[in-house]
Image (cartoon, rainbow, N blue to C red):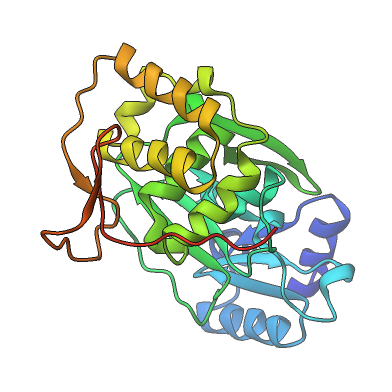
Length: 268
């Protein structure tokens, strides 16, 4: 059986991905160079694509024209291949929760340290974010055509959008997504355990945005009361890490925020 036929047999059996190691173990009579050459030829013919070194996706017919397979199709398989926990996060989680505003052009995936090399030439669609630990308690599952994917729940997504705002273009972008995300957020689901995965200063910034930028006063009040109940004490922090704080910068006394930048949301 040729490698092409082996790939075809996998696809009709419902298997959508494979690794170089699986091919090598199947074709022990072929040299590594011959296998690599054949996989390269099949990729050039848009039979397969390789979003990560030594990991391959069989391109289904409905993606064959462009030869680009969206990461939702294979991300769970890839992360199992890498043996790393993960979740779809930030704008990608927002999209899955119905709060994308504009469909993101990139796919945001959060996994654990240590970081690893990922070639932009192989896959320019994936944006990697790294944490010390994955917040498993605050993840949801969604069925896809190849299985399931994990993504952050509305409350964890809100925290990530503020904490990692720089990764998505800044706090204005984060606030724009939050305007839609609040429709599925529940203040009671912000638990003390969440503080193990973020900082009090992130919570302060989120509360300030809820109250003063997207004008969700009731939610902001509930959020504030929750943090007080957790016994968290606020110290003054800048709204943006990446802007200077002049001595004349306005200060919000409730959230202890030094307002050193303007947040502007897009019209929905």
